[in-house]
Length: 295
Image (cartoon, rainbow, N blue to C red; front, side):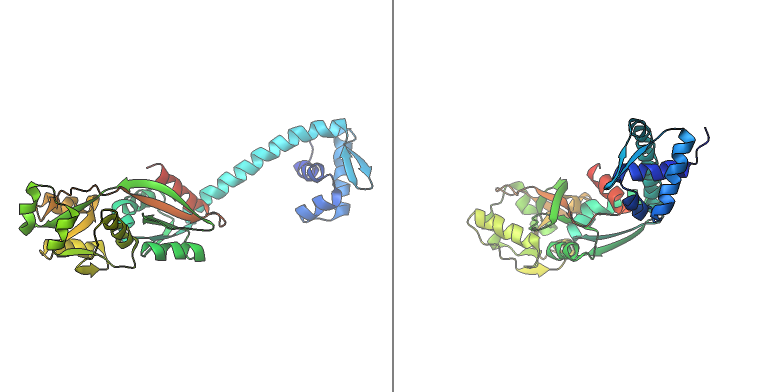
């Protein structure tokens, strides 16, 4: 039996909607053409597939049996089309990411490198923001998603997924080496110049809350825009600072700075993915997110 496949495709939609007119609308065709095609199909398979009613059509037992086979075949075809579409999206797609400096330095750079090696055709646009600014770009739709460090304050359609954790440490220049022989308390830090990020950052809020929890005031003598600037100033002996441990490794290895033990335990922080669940990600962005979650 050599039946035109197009007849089976039309039959699938007629059977699915139980209506010739709805099927014609979905297929971008006319109702007379749909009716004609189904008459031809019935003739070729030598069976009555539909019972026409005032409200549409009903499937006969033969029609139900054929629909079970055809719907299974169409499901496979739809899956193949989606897979091909995904593959094309991974060849020529775009991803726009908002990120905080900490997240970029200790997590995102490595993920971008791995992703770019696997999917060199994807165009990547990376915008550096403070965490609050990055969240706002997600809300406004300017970026596909954001990768930021905690604390994260979200509301509405924004969802947060943890990707990795990290620990901040207290560091100073070589002139502070005398402090490395013992644990220093937060109350003692007021005796030294302390550096930190600006008041508009979530890192500042994190340490303000941390100090308050222990009955102390967080009042940096020097406020800067980026952690890289903090490290530069630490090396220049301008004071002490709290810095993500991964960002200090090279400087510690070169013995440009020293680690100072703190009596109070600094809470663990996290790198998080923030996205708007009301705006689906494209295939390239979904693949990147999957890679980040599985790292």
